[in-house]
Image 1 (cartoon, rainbow, N blue to C red):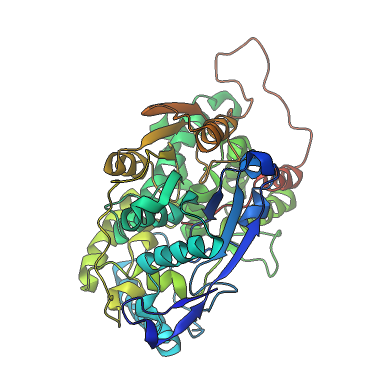
Image 2 (cartoon, helix red, strand yellow; image 1 turned 180 degrees about the horizontal axis):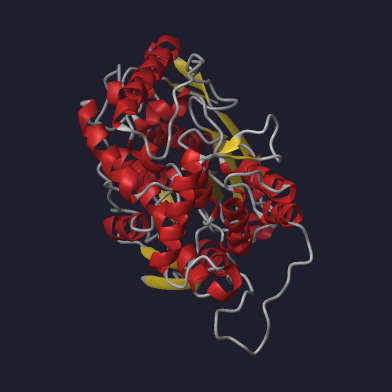
Length: 477
């Protein structure tokens, strides 16, 4: 379908929007359409109906996917490719700050050169307006909606702009309505620290097995000591092409990203032990290959210029010194995962276009109570975003305890059942419902003498492959 570039001046140009439809499996039970969005900003959504084809909702709804404006098979928004060799360490020094800011300015200029005329109109409100034209094209009076990650904010904006055209809505792994967008980025590093500390507490209860410390404080101190050694003597890893080094920056990132899924906790503890033993030497081939397998899926893919345009729809601090002050705090308190890079200047610091409208005032007035889903240790949209969005819209909230997965429908059985019951039958889960995350690894805590510690019968590499195979693709923030 085609939509206006600028809804205020429809004659200024048109954009293509690619839409997919998977018709309901049970026509007699069909309840209309369910628009779905994977997040991003900039996530391609055409294939999402196929991904959800095995869920119960596929029987009752036509599943509608779409590539938002600027993305995929819709009219694309590009940034010029920029080659940059500036490091983005988890614990940058003050001397590195200006180079990181200069790199962000260079990327912003590259985006402006490639898509300057289109960028002001690639925003959340216009994507919501595109969604309403999809509704019109399908001949539907109302839509139902299921959005993940950034798609939660998109759904909230749609409901605020078109309340009479939205029926049931589910916001899975919600953005915080007041964190647009710099604070949202910083909270990813806060969530990374929370996951590392949860893992470290589990390890501390199993000191007889892992010998990394018998308290959270001691485990964290040992991690810092390992990191300090790696900063001086990086460990070569035979598992990677060209043998890159495992340095402190790598170690911080590994801890932040790979302590999110509870199933990998035992493997992570063993890999930390292998790295500690290798300081001053070389990592074992098995551990190196395991780390290579995990790293291959840990770093989120880059997106086109849509991500930069949409996240710049809100105002960011314009003084680089404000970012430098935050980075000093984050390199000390929240160095895991992205670390201080979560607080660095971005293209939006140097935004070269003027947004065409103000951020939408979120409210739920005129459409039914919806459902917000949030994991306790969500690494991309930190937990506080869920309760805040539920309060903002007066929606029901499903909290998932001891869970680090981002995007839960179709992954957590309890959440999936409650969401299905709501979308298909209209049954709300309750204003504050709870589901449990998956069990932690079957490694007994110290003092649990009824059985011995299970001995893994596979290599570290084989276990890493198993973790990856059991992981569904992670939707982006």
